[in-house]
Length: 492
Image (cartoon, rainbow, N blue to C red; front, side):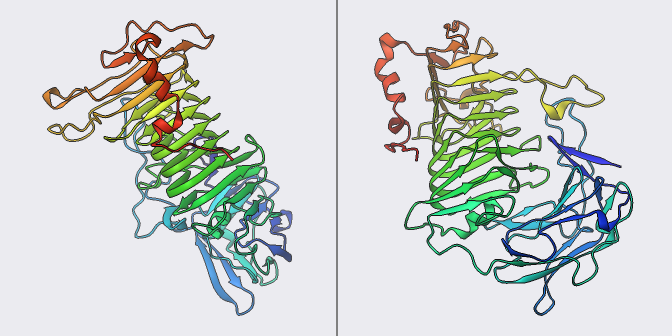
């Protein structure tokens, strides 16, 4: 059996066998009242492997029309392994690219993503119909070639008859304009997937709408595009997990697990977002105005949180593998913590805006190598310095493209493992660089026990604020509305 590991997940890619009678199906054969956004789940007595060919077909029982097809001969992505070109010395070489005229794609929030039509964990194979393929008020027939799955023991004959696996969807969805929707992975809510609920909600509902997500694991790419006036709230921060293995090699243009695009007045509360891939792999990407992250846990890799617009982040935790915050946004952080292998932020504040401001937060070094640098040839991997922010040149050598208005302000921050210089490197790019507008400032930086940090060796571009000289500046940066252009966030 060959196992492909991406982040913390294992995808089984080769085969053996099991009797069809040992399967458990979800939705169960003959089930009624099924949500149209359901996944199809098969449980075996032993671990199934995903075949390199074979087709899953879903038919409308009324007229036997074909409504969806999952063809396993189509590669998932130009780089199914998710391993890209070398980023630092010692990184394993990339896997060979898969050249094809077509790759697996599904539409998420108006954008096409490469996706895995089947994911296996242990004895459970989950099949993912294309988003939106199934409708309300229909009865469906599922058929499957024997080569689609191969359990580790026994045999699998496929699903070939019109009666072996059928189910009927609900007659209709929630009432139009409903202000509270429920998502449940077991199918006992209004929707079975987070994306299914998001797709149902009007882009700009007249009243604030809440999507309540019950405890469960939601392995899906999620995108809120052109949405407003929306709250997504988990039942339990640690028991509601939304995530996917996605990164630049797998989806070159869209490397995140969860995204907010052109959003306004969006609040995410009380759940976990994971990106199980490594490399450039955001847990969350936000591009919008008045975005609130409240009591959230976010686990990504490089650029674990990428931000544009305005954000308020409170009582949350972010973990990543360098440039852990890729920050274009005006972002006010309160009582939150960041755990980072390598630089905590690469702050890219545009002219005329504020940047990353941290008040009463905690920042931790993760003393491990960058995960993509570990290989048989380099078992120790490579580490990167966990500075507060770096400012490398980013662009053509003859252009001043290293974000000369970068702003990161720390107030009452507790730190562990940050080096004495604290900031940098800053690539000055000769006479083209003007650092006079860079604001790498800090006030009352402490260790985790609350003792003052020695800041005498800070990088020359940084400034240590004092209560005596900078009281007014400190007071301004402690107010969210100062940082966020007048917006006074209200967590709901």
